[in-house]
Picture 1 (cartoon, rainbow, N blue to C red):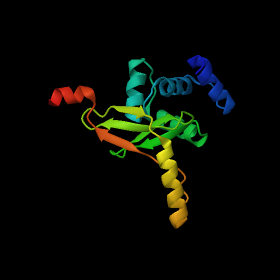
Picture 2: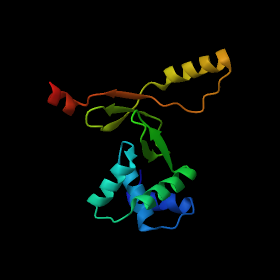
Picture 3: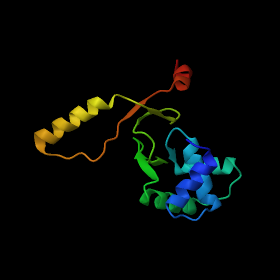
Picture 4: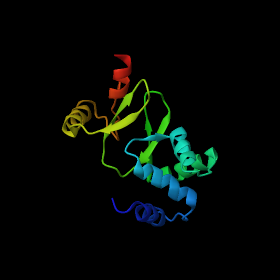
Length: 146
């Protein structure tokens, strides 16, 4: 990625958004994080940065970004919505069931592509997207329970 401020400004300008401090900081938070974030996570990071943005504004901006294809929603087992930049390379997630940390993982996509072809050929179903999450205990939580 290029320098973060330039990267964020380019995304906003390319999608015809005004450069507001809220939009810039929201995209900067998403760009700097390797895992999807819930609105609660985003609000906490805004607070940590001494940014005063209300929850409704965050939801509105995320919805606008989603409509333009800048961010995508990720649903994990807890059914909460998480958000991440949409143009990141395709990946999956591991989720700690204890502390709820989420990390990206890359797995062999060839397996999924073969399965998609089989499903499409067998029953004519067209797959538009897929989501795979693994749930367990992160290394930190394993040491606490051991």
